[in-house]
Image 1: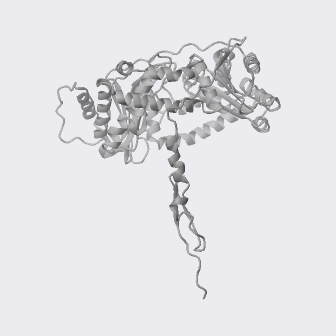
Image 2 (image 1 turned 30 degrees about the vertical axis):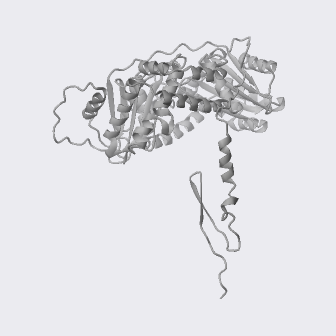
Image 3 (image 1 turned 90 degrees about the vertical axis):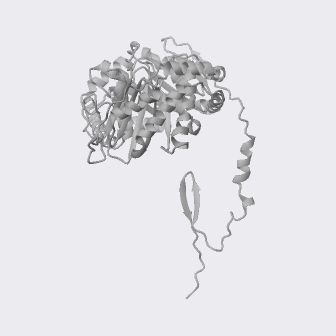
Length: 522
């Protein structure tokens, strides 16, 4: 019998968290046996030469005149023969009930079904036009806005048919009953996945608790009951009322001259029904004190979310609040929340905070997951960290480090034509100045300790918080006592019974109550 000459060696190569196994014969030399041959080492060393203080020039944003009065922002980019177009309408999920009472999910349904067919073209024919043009078209509904994007070659032979089809479906989508039925079927499958995601359930409940009857309260996708009410006529009503020229702004980036971009924008706005601007949204009612909401869920991990109402996007203190948020919980491992919960105590893998800035006041929130046996202690630590952040002086060194990090990261907002165009859409929608991107470094540099301290004390409220807890069991009175103790306003302690029976747990890993179309559930 011949001797086996092949020796199988398993070489583990860890790249981006994945482990690969490779086999080598004994006749093949190991090219990595000599460390001097590792090319990655000198490449890594070269990173020391990166100039962190390098200045990045923001794109020059032009505001074009539009004879239809539609705000149009344009950035010329001759590097690639591409054009990015974004139409942003004041027609997000917040407008759903302006079409009809309880019609949550209308904007989202319109976005999903708009490219399913018109009187002239079916879905396959629509897709074929974009494919032949090499174009990418997408439609999405958000809470504030309804966004339609087109990316296509600047060659008129490609641009014109793609542009024509985009306008065709925007104006003439039929929203057939068959398409609605398919969307409803897909939604039922999505609902089953939702029941198994405590973090998503927690986020939905959080918005409902904060906003009550305000348009921001309900999920963008709607509820089981609401989307069953949506008909083709309702979707057409939504389109005719909100997807109109006077309720949109236009963003264009790419290989066009200023004159070409202006002509394009006027064609877009002129070929739509003019209509009217959407009316301002109502202001939500703020809640005082602690609102502790317990959602029973049978799982080894508990989930927690703290928060309260924030402010609007155009608030002059927004940048100071962005800095504050990054310091507290939005800055990764260097943030206070991550240091307290993960680095010092190992309560969680990750804890994060965020501000949402919108037309009507958005939210400030922070959330994390932890083991059931660490739940109460982690809540005490997280809330105390927030109390101390608001009450104690801002750390000047941390502030400067945070600002430096934000400045280095900011060029990512205009690193490609598509990201530039997305920024133009935001500037146009929220009526911000055209030079905001170029002025940002200067505005950030001017932010002082006093600016952040004043903004924190004005808009961050550890004494007025909604706390959503998804866990196996919870003593709400005990938790409220702990939160008040963190504030230094503990009332006279109540005599708690020595044997408190645990709250009943669900039998399976799903929410305790079956969702219905009531405001307290999905």
